[in-house]
Length: 81
Image (cartoon, rainbow, N blue to C red):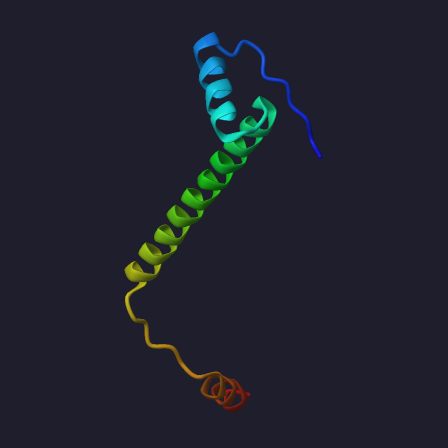
């Protein structure tokens, strides 16, 4: 598991983190870990949703192209020789 050190965290933020941790029966470290995990996975979820929206938009812009069947393409290639 990785470890990080957070430097220069302002006192007000640290005190709120300490208060939240105490109210939930966690250590400050446990609470910070849970908050960080939640924030990271929330960002990942948001980025994935944005990517899916971009893919949907790309597909919508393609319209509904008519595609040839692979059998027709093979037959056409074979007949051209």
